[in-house]
Length: 281
Image (cartoon, rainbow, N blue to C red; front, side):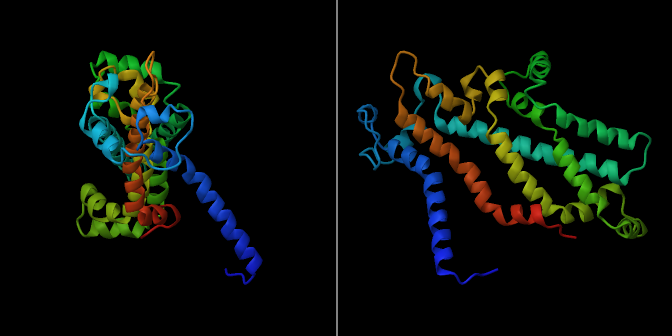
């Protein structure tokens, strides 16, 4: 829909520019602060332009151990990446298999299983975090990638979304696959998964961001900084104790932690939008 009202167009563009400025101003402040020295940041005036350190601060945090953490930001980003990928891939695989079993297999208690999965939506991580921590501790998974990933690897929301999509698959498609001699795994791998690729892509973006932004769970089960994630490390860096907080390091780490989610969204934006608003059959 297109309007030919110059005043309305001008107002719309002004509002858009104002919105962009409001969203980007904190990022700009972080970017300029990351290029200054700590002494320059403690002069009492927030810098609005780049300092003399340039990209040296970024190279330093990626290469050298950061403060009392004792590990570089490269290790922190790697930990976050492993956790986010593990959670995203695990949630999608489990959700696909669960939805496939609920929709295409006939067994007693099928709907009871589905509703049992669905009810877990009422139990967020914060509610069940103590018993989950006890289980992970008893299994000896504290300070490990498995401990970071496994308790968050199931998703009732993803199972529900895949179930709703599979219910739209025509029964004739299943019958045709049976006539051609396709078994359950062949039907899943050769027919259902190609049909589900846009849904998988959309869910991967959402679940990757969910895993990357996790704070409470990694904070609880990791006492070894070798397994600390980038999001958790930001809080630890900003707590300087008796020392001055190295804000240039905190801002550089925050900006570096911003890059992987942005890269995932930019790379998969087309599939993400299509998976949310369209179904490809």
